[in-house]
Structure formats: C-alpha cells, structure tokens
Amino acid sequence: MVMHEDDLPIEEYIYTEILKERHADITRFNELIDLNDSSNEEAATELLYVSKRLFYNHHGLDQVMAARTNLLSFFDVDTDDDQIPASMNGGIAEHDDLIEDVLNALGDLEDLKKLNIKKLANRYPEVSFLTLVKIVLMEIKEEPARKILKQLDEALSIYPDDLLLQFEKESIENREGKTAQLITYDYLKQNTASAIFKRKSIHSFELMSLHTAIFEFLISQNDVLMLDALMFASKTLFPEWEDAWSDKEVYSEIMKVEFCKMIINSTGAKMS
Image (cartoon, rainbow, N blue to C red; front, side):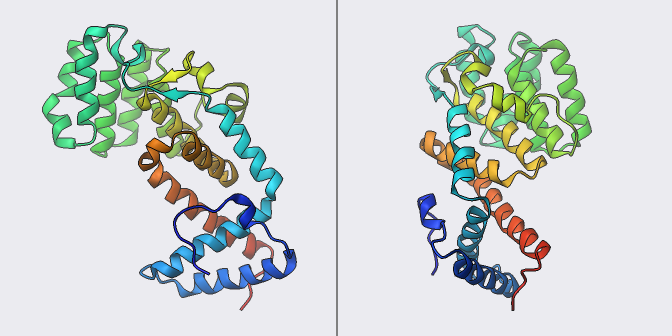
C-alpha cells in the first residue's frame, strides 16, 4: 500500500494486531531498504509510510501524543507580519520600511547584496536585526562556522539580550556539534513562546528563528520523537507557513527511517 504525501491521523498508523503487523512492516522495510532505488518515487513513499508505522508503534500512541501536546502548548503565539516588532526595528517605527525591504530581499541573494547589509548595519547600529541579517548573509555564502560564530559573539557583546541573535548562535552551535547554552529540555519545559517573546503575537521571522533553534537542538540530541512533535505542531498551528517547514519535515522523515534501521539492527530483527 503506497501512501501519498498527506499525513494520516496518528491512530491510522497504530497496530491492531501487533506481532503480525510489526513482522510484516519489518519485512517490507528491509525489502525497501535493500531495493535502494532513490529514483523509485513509489518505493520511497512507501518506505516513509512503513517507517512511520514502525516508529509510532515503537513509542506507542500515548508517548507520541504527549510529545505533540507539549509542543502544541509551547507555541502559544500567533504571527502578525503587519507590525514590525521592536526586536527588528530597534524600537523605531521609522525603520519599518527599511526592515520590510530587507525581509523581502532575504529570498534572493542578489537582492540582498544590492542592499549592502554591512553598510546598513554600520549606519543603523541601533537596529540589531541588520547585524543579524549581515551574519545570515555569511551563512548563505557558506563562510566558515568559526568566522560566523565570532561575528555572533561580537554582536552579542553589543546586544546581549537580543533573542534573535541568541537563537542564531544556538542554531549554528548545535549544527556544528558544539554545546549550546540556551535551548535545553528544561528551557522548553519551563517556557512557552509567548513567555520567551513576552507577547502573544510575533513576527513570522521571530517564529522561524525560534523554530530553527529548537529544530537544530533536537537534531543534536537525535530526538526523533520530539522532532516529529515539532513538525506536527508547526503544521497544525501555522499551516500558512507550510512551505517554510518543508525541508525540515523531509529531514524529520529521513530521521525516522534511520531510527528504524537502528532499532531493527540492534534487536536482530533483520528478516529476509
């Protein structure tokens, strides 16, 4: 049975005849892995489906739902891009048009270069967001992580309370295998998004910054269950930003496949 891209309700993945269905899924999983044909879209789709069944039944419905409920509760904000927050305009509304120009240019490297972000950051030192975008441009250009982290440390010495700079540093440190300082399980447990930003309505850029920091933390912990919950909460609460989650969702699904490989091999459940 081949599934389409749309997720089924979680209950549809849960076994009713556990031993029989697990045996069949492990057998089919191994067959699809052995096929190893990345050009076969039908087989790839089925592999993701079988991996989900194995993954969700390994953890159980209660554990999956508990993780999802936690992250649904965490993201207790909505997004409003009609208002540029102080975290992005330096608390000066006159900078809003400039910030909008920068945001619009973020999707195109050439447009971003034309704005001369480095010059703008020097011209408006009260707007830490411009310094952040200057650093994001370094990432887009794939400059060395150590150089980017040095720039972030310098920026945070000037703007120590800037959340967006902190999240950017967290993301890069976790990506580089370093021990990050801010995002932890306790941080996620003791906070909500509205408590972190101190408001219920945030800009989509703020949401993406926090989301990426959490995403990179969970990957660094190899926590596929919470990663699944993060993607579920994202799609449920912010369906309008679905395109923004697409690459992360693909990565999350690949991690489910790798998780299943590990569990099957560690339990000697390889079947042929």
